[in-house]
Length: 94
Image (cartoon, rainbow, N blue to C red; front, side):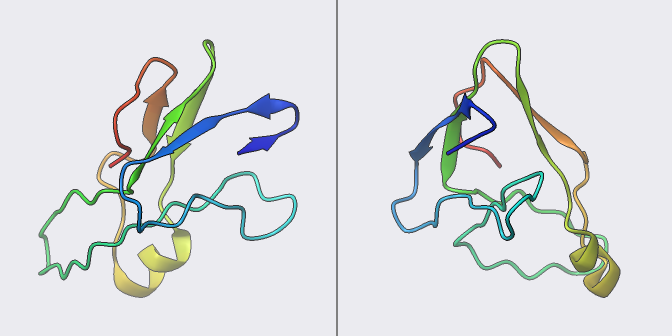
C-alpha cells in the first residue's frame, strides 16, 4: 500500500481477509475489515481481528477511526477511538 510517496508494508495474518483499500480516490484512509462475525448485546464490547499487520516507517503512526455511519445507524463505535498504530508495532491490528 502506498500513497503520496510513502510505502507501507502490509502482512496478511489471515489469508482470507481482504487487504485494506481506499474506497474512493482521494480518501484520507484505507478501510480495514474482519472476517469474524460478531453480535453484540447492548453495552457489550469485543476485540475483533483485522487479519493484517503493517510496518510503518519510523516517525509515522497509523490511526484507526470508527465509521461514522456505523455508529449513527447501529450505535457501534471504537472504545479507544482513535486507535494508534505506532511505527514500531508489528502485531496484528485489532
